[in-house]
Length: 155
Image (cartoon, rainbow, N blue to C red; front, side, top):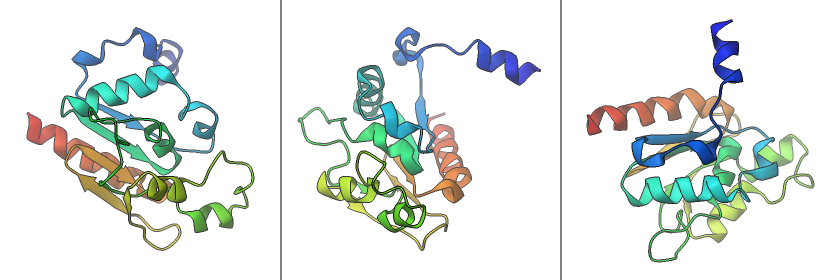
């Protein structure tokens, strides 16, 4: 019941003062394909957090929230970064390549990300300074743990 109450009282992104936030974590799932890559509030929050050396974490299709983001110099946020996310072969395996707006792996590579992956459905996490990314649902816990470790280091 307590968890249900928390969900019902969730704060909209537009109402959050991100200067008071130490990290953001973008969970995946195919639902994120609908709006993560086009939401200007989410884009602004990620860019602000990243540019102030706060932690940005994303797993699976949550990485779609990063594809429209840029660094202060105007280059793609993932450019030159070691990243992972839902692989093209995993998307093919679930037969949704024609449903998603773009393939996560291909898009990350197109944006200049140094994409790494494990075998399908195996856990894979990449940590590149304050950017933490996980490949697939099997990577969720490990990705969250890496975010927590970075938060501990920041004190």
